Length: 314
Image (cartoon, rainbow, N blue to C red):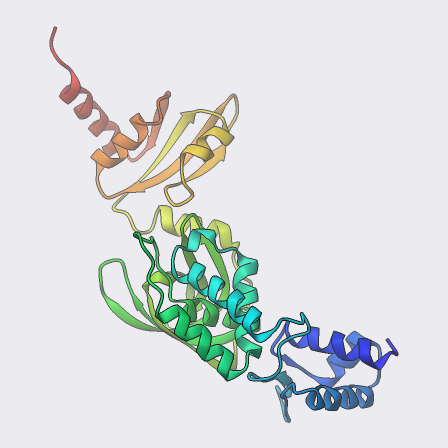
């Protein structure tokens, strides 16, 4: 890549995909020498992009906040409009926010001048949403979590559990997972030495540090979150066979309510949780098809009790 203008634009794009780059990494990506990279960095600075340099182990080049807008050629008022829409979506009903939208929001927040960032915050703070939004997430928490996952940076969060207990957790964020109308953060809990999932609407504060997390094998995010929200929070967990196709059953059972696995001959296995046996019995009856309870035995006995309740002597 020999054309300086093309190379500078490509360099700027690389800075928006990752927080920190060494000159050797940039030179390898662009097919030039580290001396050319230093000249291109100077050109970016002349154009108003605050590129910071740090030396030593773990050092490199980083695009700072407060510079010019990225080369989408958005006017400042257009960038403010985009950011306001994304923040309202993230902080109102998260069901309409995709992973790509969160990444765009994080990029805009990184490079917006202070004046534009303040304008976005002012509009967001003075806007009232009519109606009840489920799983309301603080957009600042959402953006911070997105950046921490992208750059593999350690973070500290204040978290309120399902029972109302508040705790401070030191974590290494891995990925964000959207399930139905909720956002979850999959992270390695340093104090518990294990993986944990956190509902973002229960995060009171998220502070992202500067230390990188350790290299770890991340469990399958979708499988981990689905398992944690359908089993861990509940007193009772049922495993049943359902006479229904996998597509139909998946449409009828939310990922927040159960795990569906296809079996043979038109049957599926469903794992679902509930606080009471009555709730589980009601859930299974509402499927409107043949169901065989495999576990727990208490549910099998309770279904007999429910049948006797509903039986009316002739």
